[in-house]
Image (cartoon, rainbow, N blue to C red; front, side):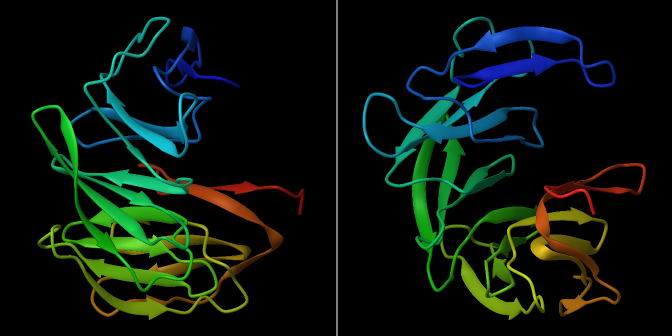
Length: 220
């Protein structure tokens, strides 16, 4: 919702929680579910500068969200991804910040620099994929998340990479002007054709049904 979180049942969208407030937040801007079922959300802080990252248990969250893990960062958060042991936060021109998850704490352990504009994130195995604005799709080795290694960039022609989602060994990239499919089996390679979206592909998601769902701001 405008200043918090709404929870609904999958399939029917029946409302479970109409509106839940964050302890120190002015609404929610990014939200994901980690593989272990913990929900992570980000947003602007209300009681101070910067942004919050908060993890909480799934289900009916009540009127005020009770965190199981939380932290704050300077600046605005553009995207988030999580595993059972780590949380990755896209900080735009500030790169990617990596937090360890342990004993209910989120502890900053590393930062990935050398990125142009980290906007969206997706994890597959020991690799973190970053939608990196005009630079395209970046690949980061996170075999040791405390020492991440920035690898190659894959150019998305005529596009500005904003969001990335992975299905099997294909990374789908929403890049405003285009939606590109990148084979990440080995060395990442853009597949042909790409889908032209005339500056309107802002987000996407993949489903178990084999479909890609694209948030398109224009009716084209």
